[in-house]
Amino acid sequence: MEERTRAYLRGRFRDHYRRTEITLPPAANEREWGYIPWTDGPGTTMVRHRSLLELGAVEEFLERERPRHVYFSAGRYDDPGASSMSEKGWRSSDLVFDLDADHLPAVTLGEDSYAEMLAKCKDALCRLLDFLEDDFAFEDLEVVFSGGRGYHVHVRDESVRHLDREHRREIVDYVRGIGLEFDELVETETVAGLGRKTPTERRTLRTDGGWGRRTHRRFVAFVDELLELEEAAALERLQAFDGIGEGKATATLNAARNNREELEAGNVTVHTAVAQLAERFATRAVERDNAPIDEPVTTDTNRLIRLPGSLHGGSALEVRRIDRDELDAFDPLVDAVPETFRSHEIAVDVTRGGEVELDGDIFTVPEGDQSLPEYVATFLMARGRAEKEKER
Image 1 (cartoon, helix red, strand yellow):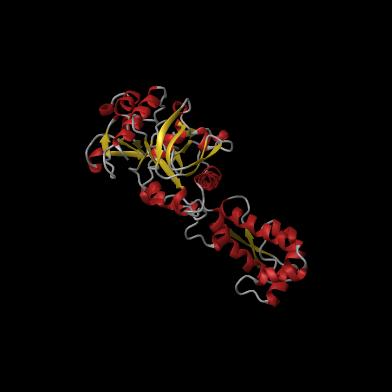
Image 2: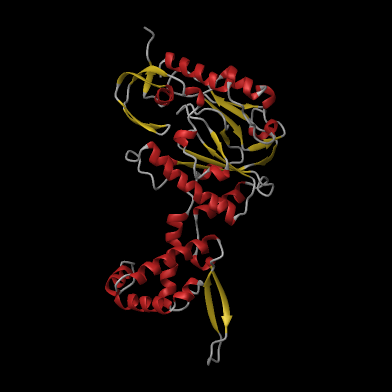
């Protein structure tokens, strides 16, 4: 990035901060603060171990320094400005989750557009929120668009703030489905069989929540698809599973036909073949329903995370808080475009052209000197795809 481009972005970031009201996180004075300035060269320099007392009023600091990136800590400390973590005196930490489109299994780098990557990341975010709200019943959640490739979720319930790394790792394992065993999802009860001298065991897949509900939902959906097929097609579908031959497929199909209501209730012991098939759907549920979070972020009690209201120096988009009831309608490529950059066009030299989707429009940008809406131009400059045109 050339100096005139950095100077332009610094100036426009300052203009953004002049007109933006920043809402600080809870206990802001107990958190560590850090930022990355607009430095020369390809590398970046992180300035950290700062307290709010050292920075001063955040809005004045942002206007004065106009940093490229701004962060605050998940952790709360006795002395947040101490130069080493051991001296800070850890008190507690928010539970933070980070979803990055670059790391999602569903994203194909080099093929998916930026908009497609963000849409898939939003799907993953909804799955994560399902875990946090339904399985854990967390209530104090803040959802944030990172301004770049994904989303952050801050959980600030009192019950989680004092968890150590190992306990946070257990939450990570749960939402990722790591180590999930089918037997853990099944309740076993002893029942007296009619005409039998000895009682038998009844195994029921839990359907009221958690991974049991997810597994059951996918299993029953498969059974319903199966029952809608012609018999030959249904048997072929079953035999596509490893270890299921013609005989077992026939037994499974017959058991499914004759026990649909029992399966809906979670009773997977109607037939051995059905129970074995249901077990496979725990793995399928993990593959399709897990939340592919960036694991080290959640386990790190000292993690620095982006400040909502600030600008992302790699996109010139705003780091945006999202009200929970507005999440479905939220479009990051429209709603995170800063108002400061909407008013006029500027001239830039595009070094890497292509499509840019922003503010509801798709721009096909060729290389060379171009006059573009400023929000498109700042996006390209921040991503290293354009330079500010030289003054004539």
